[in-house]
Image (cartoon, rainbow, N blue to C red; front, top):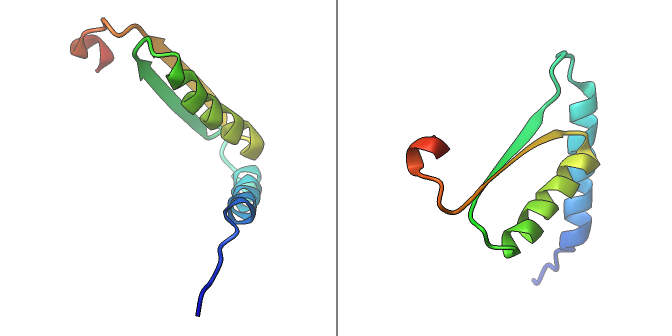
Length: 77
């Protein structure tokens, strides 16, 4: 039997459940997603933008750090 998954619907339902869970947290600190970009490729903006929107939809704070591609590994750590 073939089962067709509606990916958009599944993602929406998952985001909705996560938003409820985030709102129900009793901690004074808000959950935060941190992104670290170490390049100069503008295509990375699209990928990070998706993360920014998803975090906003569920009520998660975002901390974005953008570094140039020339950043050395010790600085990134």
